[in-house]
Length: 220
Length: 256
Ligand SMILES: Nc1ncnc2c1ncn2[C@@H]1O[C@H](COP(=O)(O)OP(=O)(O)OP(=O)(O)O)[C@@H](O)[C@H]1O
Ligand SMILES: [Mg+2]
Image (tube, rainbow over the protein chains, first blue to last red):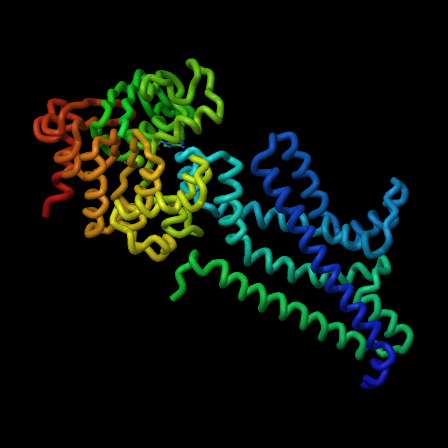
């Protein structure tokens, strides 16, 4: 093995890693936000709107991410949606993750005991107050482990963005290996970076979860 | 304190084809305690929950201080705003407490004052403290529900209801989820409320409470209100064989 080539490719790889983190972080945040909106629609909207949203979920969950990206990036211009690679990748990740996040929130909401909602109704709280003060905080807490888990899965979906030329880590690793034929070294570096990212997310996630659930779960 | 009256007239309730309440009639006088007893599945909770419209009744009328609950006219449901308005003066206490686990005891009590009564946070917390002190929890105000015993949680739930200054209190088996040694502390708070002249409707299996605190006891079976009378006449000299048989079972289960 020969790691000397990293003197030349190091900066590009680091920059790629930065883009990977950026795509992952924004894609997760936007995907979660969209998922939350979808989950609320499914809980409260009239049924025709729910059907439309359900169809969206089925389509997105039923197709490969790669295909969605191609359609967005190469098909988008046909309907006037001309995006650069990075924004296209971000939008793609957001859309791809949203139905999974929506399902996570939906089951999180269902985990909130109905009696606690009724208690709020019984003292005359509005449905909006109930959502804001009871359903959201408690539902988010029960969604937390699954949310963290799925955002970890999403880190690895970012490599697919390389195919539409988003200059993230995979893209840089591919470039380096085709130029130098150092496939093993390049991919080892890729693995190391991903391990770092995933490990950090899961540690931070665990700590955050422990703090949030301090008053909610009996610890022995 | 103003106390509400409740008139229940020919109320019927269906769950699909199942007839859960059958022509129920009941008068609840202001400042009086009414206990609802009867076997499991007889419709006690259903009737209680119809009073604050957590459950919709299908026909008949429930009037609180003369105003019909849930409907503007038979078959025409009232607006959400009006319903919330009416619920403000009705407190409810559940078997499972139903406290909000992410809030402290004080926050649980203050929540309704802030969101429903529009009070400022400081004032709401002051009132919440007073209500919690009243139920004997002055030293537990900053505890989350998880750090409270069942009896304490139920007293917080009562404080949450009375802080809203209701004119009517509904209790659905408030002590059934409690260990026996914690039942007394909750019943004592309820007795205090009764002595202050609160109108109370209490679904209970605590015959002692019914015998000593209730002004009237109503017995339900299979969705029917079989009889309503003084505690003495229902519990000690029941005329109806259905009540006799229920009490016999009760005594057998509780004797050892
Ligand atoms: N949401 C519902 N859907 C269908 N049936 C219901 C529903 N809620 C209650 N029932 C039925 O209505 C009947 C009356 O129920 P209810 O809960 O009022 O009884 P209860 O007298 O309070 O009994 P318990 O002492 O066990 O609490 C029962 O037969 C029950 O199965
Ligand atoms: Mg019941």
